Length: 465
Image 1 (cartoon, one colour):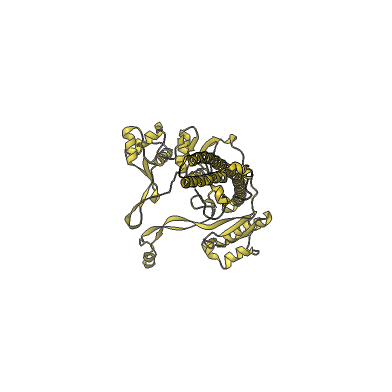
Image 2 (tube, one colour):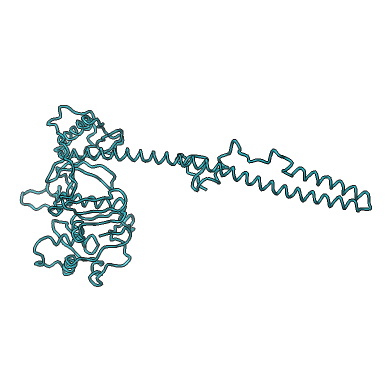
């Protein structure tokens, strides 16, 4: 299945998805489905904007949208509609459009199963790539990938994003990463870890009950940095993270925090005033610490994280954290080398363009000189022929005063012809190549977008013609 970047290009619903849409339209009656597999199809419908799924307050429900009713009535999606997105009320009641995009792990797997295991998203923006990567990670973590299959993708950062379900036997085996030991006590601390504990605790967003374990994990990271020849420290900017790994001179910042979960919390004032254990106290849903540690890095629209989960602990994910930091450093160094190669290539292209512009300028200069000489020679011939006519006119005049004036004018015409005739100046009858040419004179002969007055990567504002 291929999803175009602009506009809605979803394929038609398969029979099971259509059955699920009709079921939601009837109000989700009981007794239709024998297991919970229908939820996968409903999530796929939600991704297309045909239904809305509500999982709040510990319950599950689905409701039709206008687009869903349109599909049931007409058998196809709305034409020329943009992909569905939520709206929210901005400042002063203005309605603004959310820039976020989301896709659930269940919907992703449903689409892959319904379309031969391949999903192609045409050149998506970064936030869409990130949403699909999160969905893939959740599908793997929650065990949604069908048995015997593996989830793989290409186009992580550029081009089309292609997600595939492939037989596990065909999937390249990832090398096992050696575990990283976590110390048992805090008797020996790295200077940065000690600073976090003693004076920079605000960087470590964890509750007191989890602080010791967080510091032990940070010390394990510091020890591993020393073993691998990396640097461990604190970011210079207070807002940039909890700690920093520097690999081959490339820094990567990480946040360490305790995950929050939404749970009902009794009203503190009513709880304090309650006299009996059986007395009812109202609760509100709030985000509270979960006791699970999490480390994350990367831009806000594409965070990479490692955390405590049912099947593993943060401690066991530390090798993956180092693999991430080292791959980020390798990518950064490769990007720098590529940028330097491209910069050097732009410099060579500019120097070559400047050399060619100089040659074109010289050719244009001599071409103009040749045209000017030809024009001057023609004018000199015309002046000489006119002087002959003047001389004949002077000879035919009876008034000697007038004849004298005409002869004087004839001599001046001949002298003017001698002055402008290039043939009388042999030194000028040659191809010239000036030693110095002003950069501004070369600009008309440079390629579009270039100037001879400065290289392409000059820090000053680009000049354009």
